[in-house]
Length: 304
Ligand code: ZN
Image 1 (cartoon, rainbow, N blue to C red):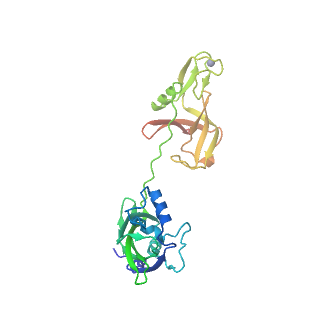
Image 2 (cartoon, rainbow, N blue to C red; image 1 turned 45 degrees about the horizontal axis):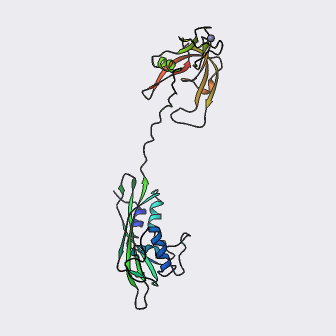
């Protein structure tokens, strides 16, 4: 694969040394003590007077609370320019992969540090579980300032993966399942068998929907189920445009449907142009199965 021009530009930076970033403060006991408290380690460590934990190496040259706030004399260069160039090509995500500290010796209170940065490597384009991108390795070298020549005291290798996230397939959203109770089970089981069952009072013969335990007309608890013909008219409707909620189609026409037996129910309208729905138009039921375990009655315009 031929690499793009922009990558040639990035690779030209490999090996580049970036200028010094100075420490705000000399190596000091208060910072060491607080660091030990936070990390839960004993202080003083290693028994030596004035010695500080080696793992604090990075701490001494940190910018502090405010981003890019480095002491006077520090470089104005951006040691992360390669990351910026890669990001500009759409590799917007980053994850730290390795951080390796090496120490040449213990540091002692009063030493004044700085570090320089080298862009060590930019890998070939790789595809990982996270996505496709580039491993970028930076090496920071830490020095202690001395009158007889600055002394290298440690290095920090820092490797990141700068990547374009893998686009995960959108999870399949199922239709919400109805809450099924002893009062409504007959309706959903009927639908599964392709029957539109309507509750009918045994005492006064009035129909009711949605199902309930008591007849609202005569208060009888006795009921039966009547199989409706499925022929109906459109009593009213709404067309849902927003919000667009999966898995429903949009716009989503929903009808209040009057069955020829005389009761009404709410159902999705199918096979219709939402702009051409008309109150009173003739409809007929059909049953559609969703997600393998849900059957819903829906209504479409009646065949002429
Ligand atoms: Zn009744």
